Image 1 (cartoon, helix red, strand yellow):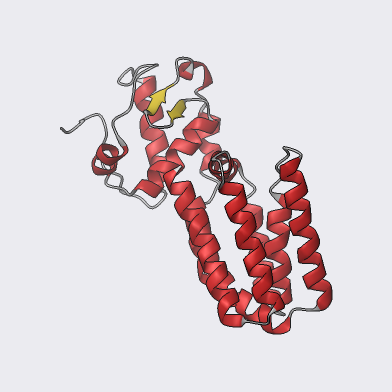
Image 2 (cartoon, rainbow, N blue to C red):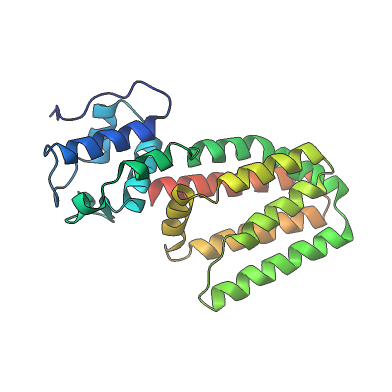
Length: 236
C-alpha cells in the first residue's frame, strides 16, 4: 500500500531530505505525535532509497528527540516531538557526513594500510597497540565506554604504514566520526550483548597479524572488522 505522504528523494544528501520530509509532515499535522511510521521496507520504496539512508535519517531524528526507534517494534514519532522541533537542529545535520559513506571510505583505504603496517610496524608501535587493547578491556570491565581508544588503535596502525597521507586521511575521517549522528548509531550498536567482545577479538586478531608481519592476514582482518561494524550498525 502506497503512503502518499512520503515522496521519492532526488538529491544526494538523502538522509537530510528524509529528515526534512518527516519534520515538515509533523509540523503540518500529516504525522502525529505517537504515530508509528511505516516499516523500513515500505519507507525504502516510498523514498526510493536504501536502508542505510533510513538508518541515518532515523539516527538524526532520534538525536533531535523527534523519533523513537523500538527494537522489534518499529519507529514512532515521540509524544513530545513538537516541543523539540528546531530548524537549526535540522541544519546542523547538513554539516555531518554520512556514517556509511565514512565507513565505505575506510573499507577502501584501511585494509591496504594495515597490509603496509604489517611490513613496517615497529616494536614500540606493537607495544602501543597492546596498551590500547588493555585500556579498552579495562574500560569495559568498569562499565565505561569511550570511543577514543578504538580510534587511537586505528590511527596507530595507519601511522605504522609509514604513509603520512594515509595517516592524515584517517585523522580527518575520525574527526568526522566524532559527530552526533555516528555516535548515536555506534552507541546503540555497542549496547547489543556480545558486540564489544566481538570487536575486542577482532582487534586482538588484527594485532596478531601485525606481530606476525602477515600483510595479507592484516588486510583481511581489517576489512572483516570494518565490514562487521557496518553490518552491525545497519541491523541494530
